[in-house]
Length: 68
Image (tube, rainbow, N blue to C red; front, side, top):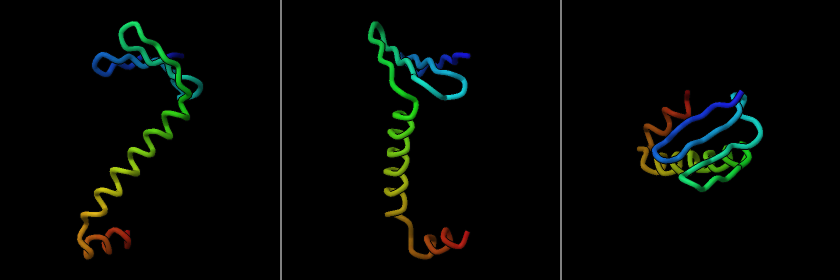
């Protein structure tokens, strides 16, 4: 089954199991990208943002995070 999600002017169409290709449409432009490729991109974005947050954590707070 296909799922359609709109974010602003961009429409994403993908399988409900998040496998295969994602069709990305903006206006007349359509691109198909493998789901795994998008997962890697988003994963790198999350890694980058996490590193930026950790760089600003106080040492005592960092130790608290490590205990959990």
